[in-house]
Image (cartoon, rainbow, N blue to C red; front, side, top):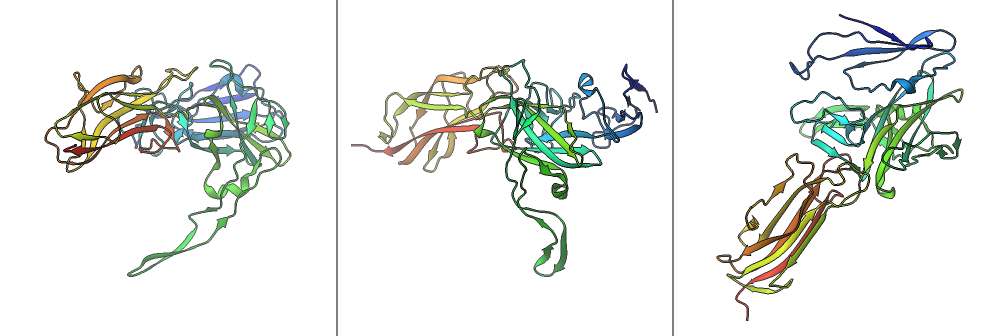
Length: 400
């Protein structure tokens, strides 16, 4: 085992990094893991261990670490997870993760989600964004989660003294957390009904104080500090998230701010027909022509300014089920961005619906478009902010 100490010029704190050369059990033969311990020397000259982590999941911002003026004990607040993604980027790519895993410095989700259910690539966030935090703070009794929008793409918001729910550019999130029932259950197996469980503990809706602080002890039962951020009531753009821990003496300890991009604008889905009208009766054998637009609109300050993912154009109905309509060459329907971040979709692309041989019935032509926004802590499919569709209905048969 190798180890090293890094001390700042004032001698206020030390970061000790012992490196253990072994292969991760979860990801064998992919990369060595780093285990590290952070210790700080407080104002009284006492050195104490603040936190221990496995893997390089915490991005340590050296300038923001000082000055350390803790009276007795160390205290640290950490934003762990945002919108289903690890809040700090593991820069080591794994299979299917071009840029590593977590949220990068520009605020986009990258790589596999924290629960492993999907893979993000330059993905902004929308809808409900759930924020989880943690504290290495023995005397922490309250916590607050605040957000602030960047004025432009390069100027971060600043913190400041609290005036109600506002502190500097930040505003405390004050979602009234719902009643929570935890896994403390007393369960017995009763054939043939299976397991019958009695709830041991339920916590009622959680209040907050005049500065947006919630009770840490009340919330510990959930396994972490939690906040629900309903981003649809906020303007799209670049935001910083800040977790504040308050101890019993009223001292506050701030987390490293986590940057996220909020994008609640759905993609564009448009269908235009050239030789028929919606709800027309169409003679079997007619070649129905038109154009479609399936793209993501520009968002100023975003890099890239669009986050298109996929579209499909198809007709549905009769005995045909769901059949893709092939556009004129080159045929690319359905179409996926395939990792090409410059792909914003298509605009006014021509198509032809060949109706010859179809049985008489009611049909619809439907265009579906997805973008890469992580909505409600997941990628989602139909009906979310990251999805749009356009549909036109027809009757196919012998028309008089």
